[in-house]
Picture: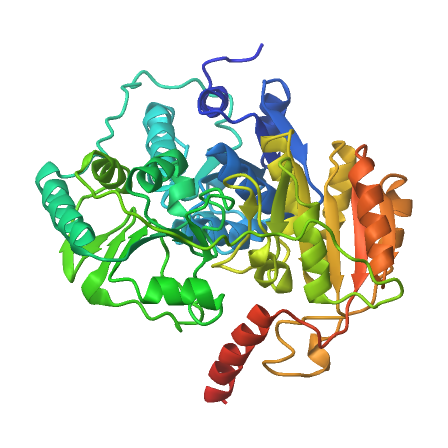
Length: 548
């Protein structure tokens, strides 16, 4: 008879209460007991082909739902998702990593059990470095409080956490010490008031203030608050690459992506000539700052995120981004008269040139017209991301990418997590051929669960981002016949595309074919790339050669 008050069932109950409906993973003997509990619960276990696919799917799920879960076995499963968990930590995606492990009774005398590496706590130590909180549920008297502590940390800090369950503890009854934990994540009121006063004075005294919105606006679900601030003040707002679409990109005050010299001249000039930049929830990383080509004056810079508040060289402690943004909404800020030229005068049609070889520029011009309200763009690393940055998505938070950590292979499995999180969205997956070969096997998972992403493979015969930095045969990969992959799964449609008219026909057919995935193999010249990627690789090439 199943123990409803067991450690395993309590963890499942809490995940359901927090809005989780799906768990991604691969089963294994040390986690089979928990897998069985999942199967008998309201949570749906999504079997992926590989643990890394599960990790990326859970990451995308967390970005849309607020919390994701990946469940794997000990070491051979857990260590395979160290990379995806590191990405979640770097980009603030709250994913709960659940790993089975040898039972407490199996560890006596330190036997050499299969999957074990060095010590029984080796995997635990690895995940301590890439999560914000971690625990091993080896004591029924502390399991309740440990589950609460770790889940609270995931939600508070928007970063991954690690929960290890020895397999003989899954069905053990929770101890009696089930006191609710206290969580005080509010700001220091004095520091908050002083910071707001300084910020409001700087903003009101400025002639051309501008908001620079980052990914934490999305992670902390502050999109509506940001929109209210923009409409209250009429301030222009630019986005970082990682924060793309935190505000509706069709909004008249949206300046587009600011990424230093890598970005468009209009946006760069407007932000850098501002006498007060209000950075909200931004990561000042190398890619977000155009490989540090950004020129932001620290004397007129307000930088507030979940970890720090810095205003005009002054640093404030214990101020939450949520409280600060709400404080700005309630402050006496001027309403500005700002006339911005329309950024989004998108063409109403695409004049197809029959027989003309497709290029990166023309491909993305056409995709801009293809995007609709029910599309979510998921971009892998490379021109999928850097050319994709110029795509105009129609709703907020409809662009996902690993734009900071930049791990190849994210996009295809991420489409699984995205569509599980919101079945009303159809993913438009942009992925290079190199990245596709890393996780493209998850097409099998896509077919298994009846999903229907449209996958654009940018086929340039290798690692196009790295060729300009250091050319060599190590950047080449084997050419696959991508358009024939649907025949392996007996489902989906494939298209082999070399010309503009072939692209047009494929997009038209993909739009109407919704019962399975569509894969468009777009053949590109290996030397062809977007202007943004050319600028990026030039800067990175200089760094590579500086170390040789």
